[in-house]
Image (cartoon, rainbow, N blue to C red):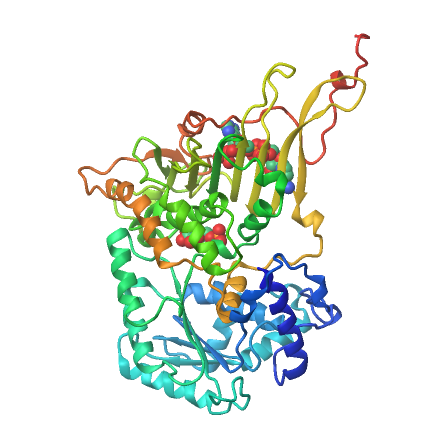
Length: 569
Ligand SMILES: NC(=O)C1=CN([C@@H]2O[C@H](COP(=O)(O)OP(=O)(O)OC[C@H]3O[C@@H](n4cnc5c(N)ncnc54)[C@H](OP(=O)(O)O)[C@@H]3O)[C@@H](O)[C@H]2O)C=CC1
Ligand SMILES: O=C1O[C@H](COP(=O)(O)O)[C@@H](O)[C@H](O)[C@H]1O
């Protein structure tokens, strides 16, 4: 992260000096943009680390083409192109970058352009944004072709070479003109391997420059299939060239975990089994599968959310302090802590499936879901970390579809204060709200203001939209694509991380899949509820105590009894 300062400085300086075409200036004035401009001076960034030695490895390469494979699909339309546009608009793409879509669908340029920009937000039709969208279209091209036919990739390569034949800038005089290609797989896993093979054989630049691939989950369905997939991909692309996305690693508050934990002695000194009673990492979505049941049913909520997103959050929350912010130092620590977690047990798991309620259909009423499916749409499961820091602390991961709210948060509940001078006092609890409305708040006890000497529960509150009122929180995909362009693997999943993640979850998944006999039947819960009715007993079993002290957020008005003068009724 120390490099952050340096990279921004490099980008800023470079753009000013060498921008030649369509991309807006990184230092552009906010007057002409509705998105906030970048700070004019790199001094506005505090370097997180004092060692910036990693900066040498992270470099934005000119002469880059970003190739989006699966460009006609949902992921590309909803996430990849809007993220690329946001980076483009802020001047964070390489100078003279070109973006090439590739998919089976036949589309002319106009069709492709309108699809690629269809999810870019421009409320109120801001003319500056409209102009940027037009410039963005100018750098987009499209090639159609199949995923398993080598000849189609030869055509793609010819198109890329044509773009590259116009390059003039030399990043490296000794090696000649660099040609850099970043291949983004917005594709179903069934074509990962043929596409990886065809790209390597037909579209890989062999001279000066770098070739990189960004791959999206799912990375297999269990330990064996993941290993198989990984080794097939490794036949063509090295670990260094591969960027495996878990988009939760690009979320602002997930990235903030490292800073919150390691840049605050106040937190790090109590971050262990002696001070923490239990931790919950919660993912809640207020909608069901709604027509996407076919895909979901063959995965289930554990593969969809827990095994990847929530486990990634857990690993950053519990790992030891890395020696540096370099990708390998961070990922080494993540792998170490994950290796201390034994496979999840059936006794520590609660499974649920939503049923129709409040006018909303149940999971089994979704036409795309197989009849009688026992696929869990909710799971709560407790993980244990066998190391000196965390022995005995339960980490509850819970996730569900069709729940009462949209919320992803980490809830660290501290142990009870020693009784004696205090009786029935509430516990400290640190809540890190990942989304929506990013926030960090710490529940603390304070003296009730006034003449009484009595403790009451309240919170120290860092609500982002109030504290950082003009900050633009980037989308996860913006951050991650920028990292891949820079060659920074810190926020991507390493192969051994994936392996150990599957080791933790594979036995429970095989049980749920019915591989060891009959598949367990999930507990029904109503659409729009908090989950199965058994949930409260489940979390209480692992020590969670709900705060019901009656304080209000954001402003607590004291009750008349709290305002009374002691001894006067
Ligand atoms: N910046 C901000 O936006 C801030 C907002 N607040 C707000 O203040 C309020 C109180 O905060 P907080 O105490 O953290 O949040 P909640 O009261 O929402 O949740 C506290 C815990 O209790 C569980 N819970 C919720 N409802 C029930 C129930 N009926 N029975 C049993 N358990 C339940 C929740 O689990 P589960 O999630 O699984 O349902 C969660 O683990 C919230 O509305 C919060 O959003 C507070 C501080 C800052
Ligand atoms: O990977 C997935 O994540 C989304 C939730 O992502 P978010 O950024 O909106 O929190 C989830 O809806 C989807 O089922 C899952 O595959």
